[in-house]
Image (cartoon, rainbow, N blue to C red):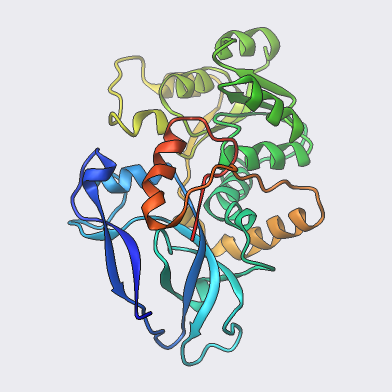
Length: 329
């Protein structure tokens, strides 16, 4: 075999299937300092939709490859690479929905095995770990709110906040997800289809929220902002509720008025600004998983190959998943 398949954005569109095509390309040869990886599993992320729509830090104009992270095995090693050999399992930011990819060897993270649970430590695990520590300045004894808590990133945030000795509130959309959240250390799951998050926070958390780990946007963002405690921190890692329709326009009192009298703050997080922290946090996550202290959760629904990637993205946007959505190759 001399070629491989990959999913390519060929035109910017809110219709994923209109935006993308499956292309064949020659299997790459590694440049000096690089490795070629044969993909075993790729992770699905909310930003995939924005990339296809041309609204998220994507190269312009198309074409460009879709997808952000993969686990695989080293297929070829470039000149000057001594710390990887063929057959080694690695994770890399990049990869995406493609059967092979090339990455600088220094950017690849060695893994004990190329298994689906290892995909979860990538964008999801690293975002939760680095954002809570570096941006949220999380300590112990705090109250932490995690929105979309049963998803790939949220489930890591719940566990890491709980392991650090904090009280964790997690939002979700079903009884099954609430049960899952309890199983991973969430002290107060809130199924927003049965309960009002705003009312729960007002009644049960009168002192407010010290950290809000927020990825939904819209009304949940507003609720989290209003619930911040004195010196509270709202970490914005996404706004998935606004991705399909576009950013919501609002008319209201500026957020600064809500922050000032609490000495509170809103802080954005994008993983690519914290790449220097990736090796340390990846090693920490792997160690916690090996020790059985951290559960790397992925949704059991099967999506296969490049052709299954769009189904996987649409499945995640349906809100049915528990844990990370993964495409296998």
